Figure (cartoon, rainbow over the protein chains, first blue to last red):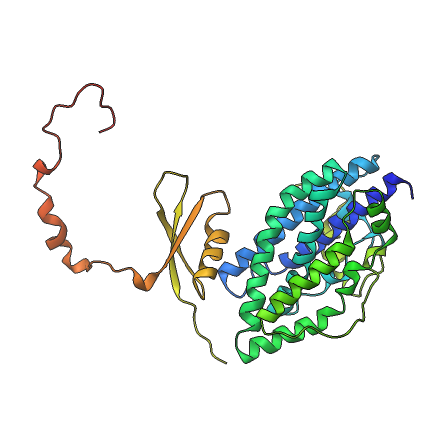
Length: 253
Length: 95
């Protein structure tokens, strides 16, 4: 991979993370447990899809040709998506959705913070500057829900602990560097994941402790998303997300 | 399983620095922290505000609608309470 290809692939990884978790959260639209949280989660979904859009625009400019901000999310196939396995996991219930969001928010915040502070790519820094404000709020929101439900009733605690235990297997992948991430770091535009890993564990520990939840002791890490090996859920996400463009190519509205 | 409704909160938003907080509506939330976050998400999505106040609706006391006549009608014919009998200097435009 030359530098341009690394940058393109790295941007796709960032964009796909936000796009897919945004798509997942948007499934809650109209189904939230209460009106206020339905709106809150939809706002978050829109923030993330908006961020993905900025990144896809950048990626499309690098790629050139027929590539556009729309063709990237709507016309690529499963193996070409670079997102983490964590973000494609199903909503299941409110506890899973909150825990998934919390694990992602901490990661998302740290990656963008490092890009903002240290990246040598001006465009990535600009996008990160906007993202970090949104991400700060997302993290506050999900942290408070983790604490509220973890340190809540017996039932809410049980549901949260189950979600933490199940989703924990997908958190190892966050910090296992793909070839692209390693090169992006070496070239000076990618986030430093070694530093982020330590900070992620500190923050997660702090919040889960406050929430009276137990951090799983397993080291097992389910991985593959960053290189295009996705879980069985992913095809269904794309089927729904891409249906219009697949059925009616070039459709606009 | 207990199914308790969250309490109702009234939301006040200040649109700009220097203006007063204005009542914009109400929402449900479990406590004050959640109420402010919910207010942020429900009432400031289109840049409506720079500051949020919330107060639990039960702490707002209102007059009895049945006392309407006794409370408000007596002011009706007290026209002298409006400062309309003064001659204002030309320079004063915003009285």
